[in-house]
Image 1 (cartoon, protein in one colour):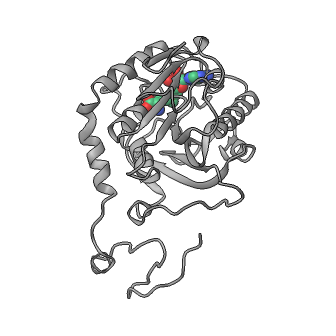
Image 2: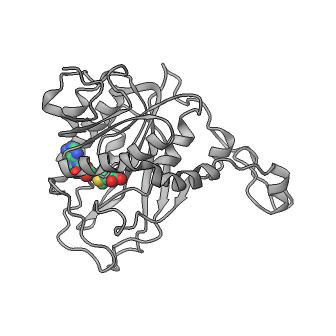
Image 3: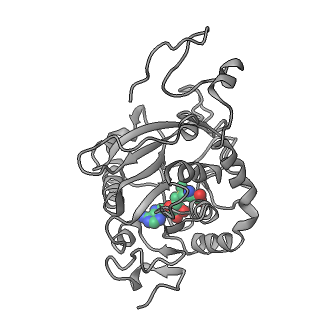
Length: 310
Ligand SMILES: C[S@@+](CC[C@H](N)C(=O)[O-])C[C@H]1O[C@@H](n2cnc3c(N)ncnc32)[C@H](O)[C@@H]1O
């Protein structure tokens, strides 16, 4: 089958490793189960990925702020050990399809079940990835209203790295990107604007792509639990190619329509780009009492206090 010009694909019509740089075209949206579809992608093709899997929340009811998350064709409830093993398998497949030097950003949260904490690090350490950073996503608002713990308004985003050879550190971010800090504050997408039950806000995949992919390079961006296609829209608007996977036909169609009208979302991308183009000098920032940079934190008199560690 010649798939180069087709945009929407079904997993069962694809052959193992048939999705390559050459067959990708502008991008592909593929319907099917994540592990079956990843099997159709060639080794080492992805530049960067970002995703948010279903969290296995086993929810029956929710608090009064946010409605229960109900997906189109998926019940988010399996035994926890099975869920974690599946996530390890998925992340290892994503590692295979990612190019050496490439990154994957994995959004998850800390959960509890009858007093037992499940932390994403529990299964991330069992994968092949090098754990580069834990980013806190301060979502400002969240649904959990019971008083067993302080109100959990944050989620986590794990920056996972596929090293080149044995060099685990990788290259540095551009300094304007590195100054964005490891706490990302921004509310989730407004449910009245996007009917998917758990969409990313557009700035989030845009921030990842802008920070990781050189502007001169056309990257290949993956979101293997693509939902309403926010990552694919960000990739397209930033001039990259994309691969999106979801098991729901409805979400694939939603993404395809969104990609056709992507230009209407450009103002949000421009707002994120502006955050990566900070033009003020270190001197100006110091005079305004702002953070000077990642290498030389200063005391109240502007004197460096310590060198930060890599
Ligand atoms: C949290 S949502 C992702 C939302 C997305 N970030 C967005 O911006 O809309 C998770 C998605 O994973 C999909 N999904 C769940 N299990 C899957 C599987 N085994 N294979 C493929 N997709 C799956 C669901 O249909 C859902 O759309």
